[in-house]
Length: 263
Ligand code: ASP
Image 1 (cartoon, rainbow, N blue to C red):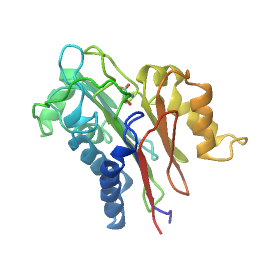
Image 2: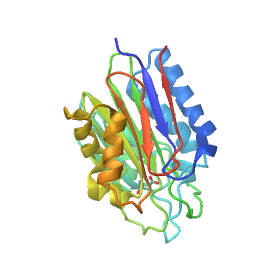
Image 3: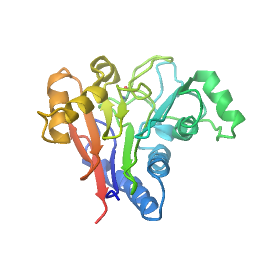
Image 4: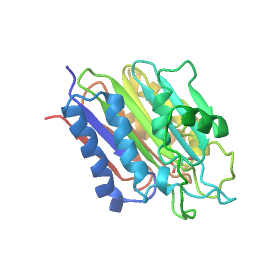
């Protein structure tokens, strides 16, 4: 039996005032875990809470692209080798549910109108997402990592994309290895300037570092990634969980993050 654990972030930029909002999602995930839910179920439901909270740049609070559209990305990966991601979905307040529905399909990812049609066929909520104007400060996108009692891990991330980006722009959130990476031993999620995160293949490389003999802790691996793989001008944050111990967060900004571990 593993100690169950949850860690969530609220984006690289917005600072401690989002802590309470994040705590709501962490509490939902921990309660679900305590009542027997799997890592996937808990991660998805916590992510939905954050997508439904308009202060975050994900789902309901997704920021406008430069043409005024609201296009949403989400991803989920599990430590038993499953993957689902969606890119640039319109009229989808909870893209993480569509991504999660891909976990057991023979395709990993869907984009744009194809993603929306597939979601329609499977009965996923279709509703106009009002969105909000781009933000000047660094991002407030969301991510959740959960470890359940069987030791399985799941990482769910969701975003409206960085501000001031065109429609069709693909950030790190739906790209495996960039915005997230999970294997049997650890799970990592990134947030912040997606272009820099993607160029660095940040989540994969931080995970690889965490597994190297020379790396004492997850925290060390995250700091190594932030210091060595990301230019100092870019705002980036990371959360991670291993097979034991609590989830951790590190950032080169004031990233809000919250965690829970079973007593
Ligand atoms: N990484 C996200 C993106 O580039 C945005 C964010 O984390 O704030 O789309």
